[in-house]
Image (cartoon, rainbow, N blue to C red; front, side, top):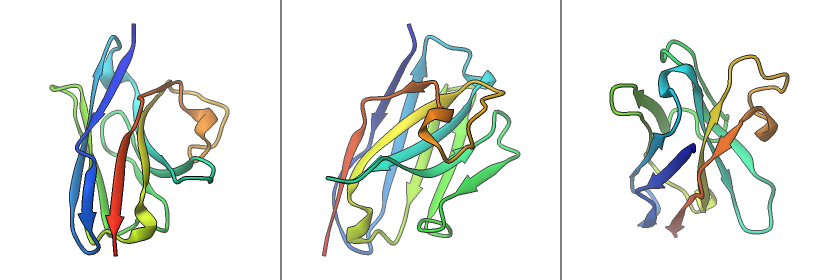
Length: 126
């Protein structure tokens, strides 16, 4: 059974930092691209970042580029999202997701991901 468990969310002031982690089990982690999405209250789930199986390809949403960094440790079956210079508009539930290679959906589309975690809430106060 595939499990993705996010941690590291919380309340932070604007300008602060948080590091999210996602621990994966039940799958061959190094065979999956990994991504982070987020969903603010009343809004659709949106793409945040994606990292390829070997970390050689990394993509970011324009809204988080430069401020956020995605990384992974295949030995620990874990993907990370370092979030700096946080803004109130970054407030959302952040989801970790895993993608099987060869998806027909564009990488920013949530349908490109096959497995999802339950999410961790990030709240940025102004």
